Image 1 (spheres, rainbow, N blue to C red):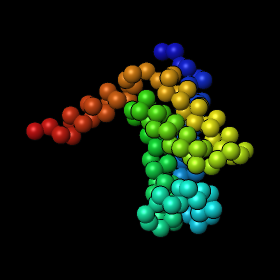
Image 2 (cartoon, one colour):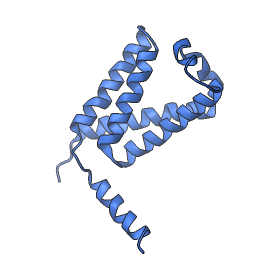
Image 3 (cartoon, rainbow, N blue to C red):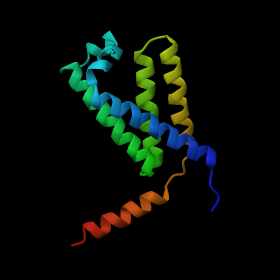
Length: 133
């Protein structure tokens, strides 16, 4: 079996990035409050600290899904949309440009992923075993 090391490095690095940011947000939500743009603040119907915790939890889950290879095409697309949304919310600055490049990396991973990963087949088999009647 031929391993695509470029795709592997891209997938693992995006997963680790999401895990690091997610864990950082969950462990210290207050330090992330300043990164929420006023335009996004107006859209959030609840406490900003709660929003950071939800976002951090989402990023941890998404990072794990990417790292473990479950639904790789869908996970990379969601990663692209998530990071692209963050980049758009930041306006035009150096952080937004970096996040835009990260979003494009996730989009590249989306195009590199096959329609079905072997992990999905394992997940289907596991589901059948767990939900037998």
